[in-house]
Length: 368
Ligand code: ADP
Image (cartoon, helix red, strand yellow):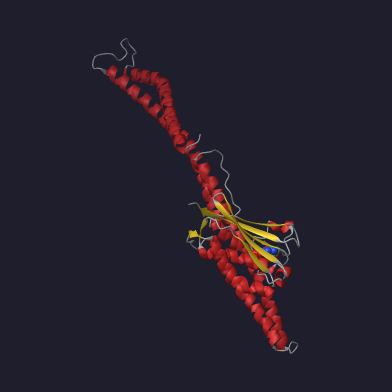
C-alpha cells in the first residue's frame, strides 16, 4: 500500500468491521442464555406463558435479556477493536520511533546511523530522505576533518621553513642577509596566498557568493585577463595566443568570476609550461554553449592524475608544483566551483607527461 492515508482508512474500516462482527457474534451467543435466564428468574414455576402474563413483565424480561447480551457484546467488540487498533497504530508508530532514535544518534555525532524501513509509503519515503540527509552530513563531516588535516599540513610546510631560517639566524648558522630574509618573505607570501585561497574556497564551496549574470563578450573577458597576465608570460618567455572566432555568441556570465576562472587556468598553464612554450586560448560555439579551451605545451598531466586534479589540495607532484611556482592545489577546485555555479562543466585532457595539457570549460551562450 502506497499511502498512509489509504492505510489509515483501511485500518479504521477494519477496526469497525472487527467491532461489528464481534458485536454480532457476541449477541448471537449471549442473547439466548441471557434471555432465558431473565425469563426463569421472573417465573420460578416455569408455567406456560413464560413471562407473557399480564403486567407486561415478558417485555421487560426481553429488554433486560437483550441489554445484558448487548452489554457483553459491546464489551467484547470494544476489546477486539482496541486490540486491532493497537496492532495497526504500532505499524505506523514503530518507523517513527526508529527515526526518532536515529535522529538522536546522529545528533550525538554518529553520522553512520541509518534507518531501515520497508515499503513505499510516506514514512518509507521520509526514511529514505532521512538516510540521504544522514549521508550528506557524514560526507560533510568527513570533508571537514580532511580539510582541517590538509590545512594544517599546508600551513606546516612554510611555517617550518620560516622557523628553520629564523633559528638558523639566531644560532648564527645562517647569515641575516638579504637572501635569507627574501626566503622568509617568500614563505610568508605563500602563507598569505594560502589563506586567501582558503577564504575564496570556503566562499565558493558554501555557495556564499552571488553571481551577477549578464550577457558578456567572451573575447573581451579573455583579452582583459590576458592583458593582466601578459607581463608574467613575457618574463617567462611563454607565448600567449588566441583563437576567438568573430561570430562568437555572447555568454551569460559573471564578468569577475569568469576572469577569475581564466586567470586560474592561464596562471597554471604558465606555471607548468617551460620557457619557449606556447599557451593558446580557443573558444568554440557548441549548441547552447561556448567551450573555452586553454591549451599549453607544458609538462602535461599523467593519466592517473587527470581525474583528481580538481580535488582540493591535490597536486600531481608537490615538489614539481612548488618549483614551478604553483600554489597549494586549490586553484582548480575554485575554478570548478565557479564554472559549475554558472551551470557549466570543466575538464582536463593531457596526452601524458611532457605532452602539454588542455583545460576546457563551458558557459551558456545567448542566441539572438
Ligand atoms: P596549484 O595551485 O598547485 O597549481 P591547482 O588546483 O591549480 O593547484 O592545480 C592542481 C594541480 O594540477 C597542480 O598542482 C598541477 O600538478 C596540476 N596542473 C594544473 N594545471 C596544469 C597544467 N596546465 N599543466 C600541468 N599540470 C597542471
